[in-house]
Length: 503
Image 1: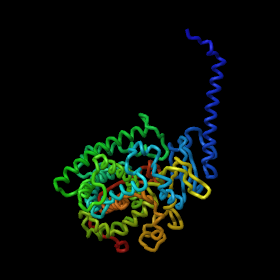
Image 2 (image 1 turned 90 degrees about the vertical axis):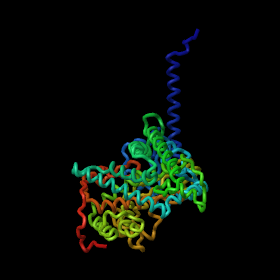
Image 3 (image 1 turned 60 degrees about the horizontal axis):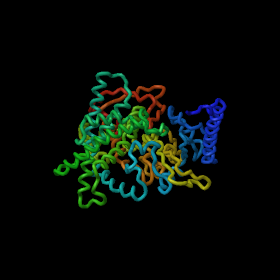
Image 4 (image 1 turned 135 degrees about the horizontal axis):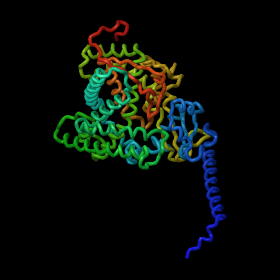
């Protein structure tokens, strides 16, 4: 017979005291470790037990980030006992991105769960260099010419639908979802062409938002059913299934000798070229993972860039007039003429505007790295191993020494080859630096430029400003807090442009 005599009220109290003591000891240890890692860097003197700055993820603001950056060139925070060192200086940001022996891209804590841990973006050193070199063929001038045709056709289709929708309901509408849909379809048509169905593209679009919200900087990091990370993993599985099917379809189509019409086709043909250097045996899954990484890199960032591009043109009508004057000249007055790379080459003002718009409101303000070992980032501070270390892009892009009047939108600063902006290219960090610098930078800027160019000649838009139009909400990337409400209408063709704004 079991005796319960030993379970007395007195013994229960002792056990509760023991539990309380252990918990207290762990909480004290947490603070001691945090203070030891923090050392002399700016940051909270003590961290909130267990969760740290997790509550900040509920109300992410650019103002809070700026306060953190302004506290010093390096500063610290802690989230769920993940120790984070943030850099606000260009010097330290470059050092983080160019120190592969000490730091690797981490994106956010849950990135490898969502993106798959064997994705090429997580490769390091020579292995990453060799893999990336093999992907450079996807962004040659010939390849960009193929993609431009898909972009132009898809963009015109979407803009036409925007005008139809506006004619049925002319009230101002937020363009966040419509721009995201345009950008997703542009990407999927460029990447997969006819090898992905409309239904598949729509399913990816509908589920992709789950991936976006799961990759915010501060987030609950565990993949428990019902959490953002869990839902993002399910969304990734859907996207990968469709992308793998597209890769298999492209291989079959190119085997017949057909002309390439998308990125997959161009890739398959390039791998069969006797002059191709590098790997030739990419499985459907590997190709799908590469496309998924491009989709991840482009969807939210380019959507943000496009939305602010529309906003900046609406809020600066003199810039829009100059863009239209340039388009009139390059297109020869024919708005229906398909855009070519050669035509894009003759649009210097548009390129300057896009570059400046992305500088003032960079879609990506930072990209986290993880210290693979103790990282001596300064003479008197070493980032602890396994900590996150995060370079800021925003501060470099708003350095007043390089960009006088840094918060002002001044496209002309890029038209002078001797300007401080053009003579200090290392400060233009919108696409990163080092071995992991965005491989599709030219593609991304071309896409944004083309959409704005087509919109400028085909439609007018009015910005319905609100008290929150100039405020920022952070959902992985930057977006106007009010969703940016526009009213579209078709543009009359053949109108005369004022002489002073003719190019």
